[in-house]
Image (cartoon, rainbow, N blue to C red; front, side):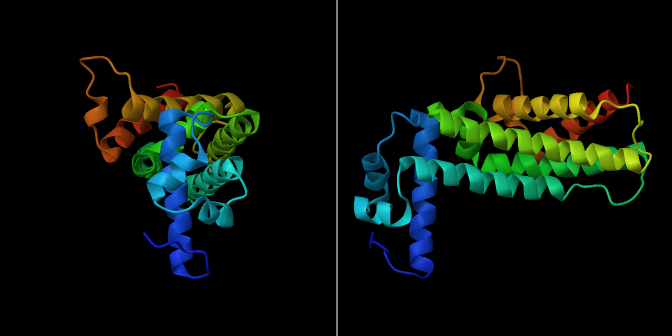
Length: 211
């Protein structure tokens, strides 16, 4: 593979490839165990090419997390309530939102594993992953707050507790779905993002409404 150390789409493709390979290594082998030489060897580029795009191994890890954070928040924000609706409407809207999150997770499993485990990284990497999960939780909280404003959820709802529970639910479902382990009789790993989203949304909203 030719190295790209100049501007243009070739350079961006090389950078994206390095990010993808690094995410796989960090998720599968751990941040500390991964060497820059491992990344460039699989990418078939020189270390000079790596350092042209990234200052350090820590820099590429942080960019993986920050980029993933932006994309995940975009997915969640697309689910913000804009108008009133019935309970059925809420479940359907939530299922659509969750399907987006699950589909993104299926397409980027190494990123999600890093976010949920810290990728075996140092304190800065773990902190960045933690802050991403908190940002996701905050985005869920805003969704619930908007639903309260529209009269779709009770004003007495504890948003902090509910958003934390929802984030834990989403994290748990994705972890069991993509990373296991699962009960031998469980079919969760064979479900599509759409199927998983529908079941999770019903569990989420009926629980929120105390039904």
